[in-house]
Length: 403
Image 1 (cartoon, rainbow, N blue to C red):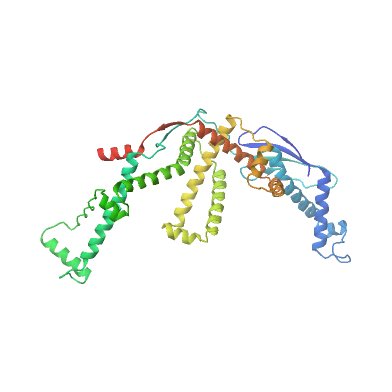
Image 2 (image 1 turned 90 degrees about the vertical axis):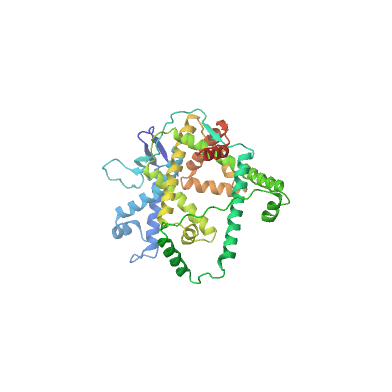
């Protein structure tokens, strides 16, 4: 299908265009609809699939036939329209003039109609200079090592205390029935004038890391070996996650430059639906159900949906910020860039061409260009970010100590 499109510049978050479908494609669609009807229904006096058009018109109604042909033409033309205009619509387009009924195709004539395509808002950022962010040091710090060590020692102390309580639980003269014991203790306390609320048990005393404790409790030859292992673990975690943290903080700083701008509900819902589909596919791949997922995490369905909606709104806002940055940087992916993106996924040239054809027919190639723009804008954002290294754990520990 060789469509013709004339479009106006986007205005008020929508694009108005005029779409023309050649008569030859209209006639081909009409012929297919007549053939489908002839094969689907039995017409008296004619073999299956051989009923002529006048007979079909008299039985089915020509307006109904033309309406089906119009739907078929538009189903094929709409993805090409998006590709031609290189737009990713926010929702479904509207066809025809306002308050006027959309006309049907006619045999032997070009089919022309007006189209209004809803678009995502073209937000402006307050600043397009590189963002300034704070990041923890790339190497493991003493404060991080101390915090992790103390956490493990605290866990060991709690486990040791629990073990001692279990061993001392059954002793001579202990009241067998727990309920009776609690009643007796409560009565004695009330007689003595003690407060009804029981005092909280003191936390187990934290042991100091020694060679002996490192060996007995954690299986290391010495305290130094234990500290070395902790340091290595912290460093591995940093190496694996600092890149994502930098990206997240840079995105957060960029999104703040949108000010109080809100995400359109239609776009937030679109992102939510995409995330929900991905979530369900992941669960299915893991052999899980939504119920089992909720049960494992102690969540209710309302909490899960609320979290997913908040996440979708945040992602949508970040995307709009990246769109604005990409526009300012004049990032415009070429056809070769799109091919390269497909080539990174499909190694066989035949598979790549098949996939690209499918994306073209479904109108999804503009979304690939959009993804490339956002990826490049994000790379620029992260690469250009001005980073201040701060030992955040050390600051948190100092603040906690001061308080």
